[in-house]
Length: 194
Image (cartoon, rainbow, N blue to C red):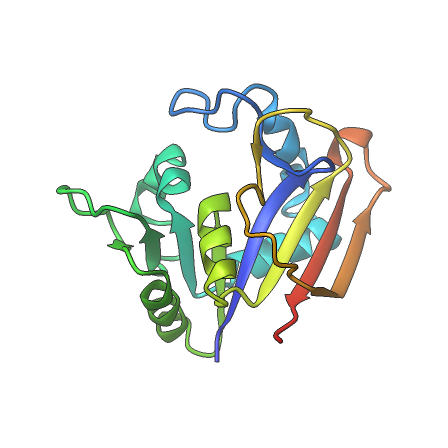
């Protein structure tokens, strides 16, 4: 069965975007700093490895806000894989390309797993991650932790219920032999099921 894995870059203080993120400034003020490590996406080292793994996934689940702020990826996140956009309301205009809107989190996960087959599903967006986590449908978290404190903006895990979610570290890849602006710690956690 397909693994549903969150892939998110986050500041050390838990932000995935700076303040005032909108269509004109999708990562908010100072938020693009989080993605300097992507300059190494074609490098044979750890950053290149995790980027290649993300691009090898066979389906994408995204929150609607993330989907919209990313320009809907012009209907193709990568290689024409299905994009399932988790939303509260389906807009009148159809989604572009391989994207489709889904309102039920469990149905979204089921469609993503079916589309991915024995591959993996990439998840983008704080809202989608939280919804999948609450529903027990998120299997793993791949967090790209950048050694910077943004201090404000959009947090990855705001709004979760008070129950603890236990995680098991399954991989840790450090990138520190590069210029400071490209340093990152790639952490993969498996969600522990009760």
